[in-house]
Length: 284
Image (cartoon, rainbow, N blue to C red):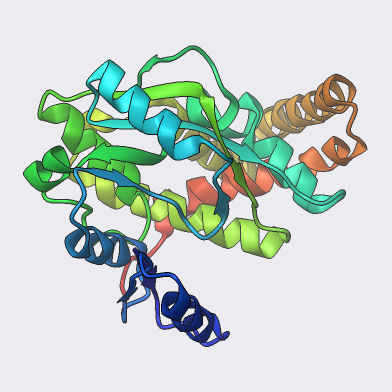
């Protein structure tokens, strides 16, 4: 099943031609173009006991589906997922990929950079037990972002397990511009606020950190106009010192000169997320 979101770049025409020659390929209309709507439409049109998700920016390696289904059965989990292996062309896109696979950029989210196998709060993409998906009602179509995290939260609240296995590795192509990265993470932040409004127990420290940083930098800017101005440099200085040292460490560790652009990439991710959470409008 492929949910096609009313694209205007010729994607639908390509899919229709493929469907003529591949009997198993079914194209499902998704007029809204929204991720959750398309996923639910594809799930409703399917008949399998197991649902394997793949998004447009992802490339599944050979054997991925067999391995994911085996893990789903072995662990008796409701959803199994692996590592989002961000890759990019040399330069800015690779720097963004490095940030998305480092705790400096994404905190303790194992599906971004790996770790031990086990139960987690969320995973990348996912291979689902269809019965559990039906039980919890599928993806929340009121959310433009954070649909996967919110769905996994509901799955866990029902007593089911979301399982991470680092041997499941999916290649992911991140944004290749600062403006695209800012827009992406601004959306992540504002829709996380919406999701947490009714699911506060899902809050993690990694989601508090960018909000605290954004507020801290804003207060530092205000402090310049007060008698406390001699302390106004403290938070900005510590933060930019931290990301600069982190960039050098990552460049040496990975032997990637692209990592030296992290002092631009990391603040973009952190401040976009924090700003979106604090002031982002969700009016459509």
